[in-house]
Image (cartoon, rainbow, N blue to C red):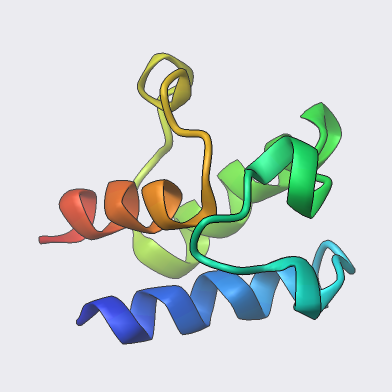
Length: 80
């Protein structure tokens, strides 16, 4: 899966499953402050990522991930 596919899948589930606003989802957008992802959303994201990408997110690995682009980088590394 290439980077564009990963970004498209992540954007799709943020919009459809979490009902977040599409215009807020940009590469430099901060997950919490700009996009509006909260701790309850994060629980859903863990389940969705496992289902769509086939790996479990480890909380400690997410500590330094602040932006949409960094989150996609993380998924790209895990699925490579």
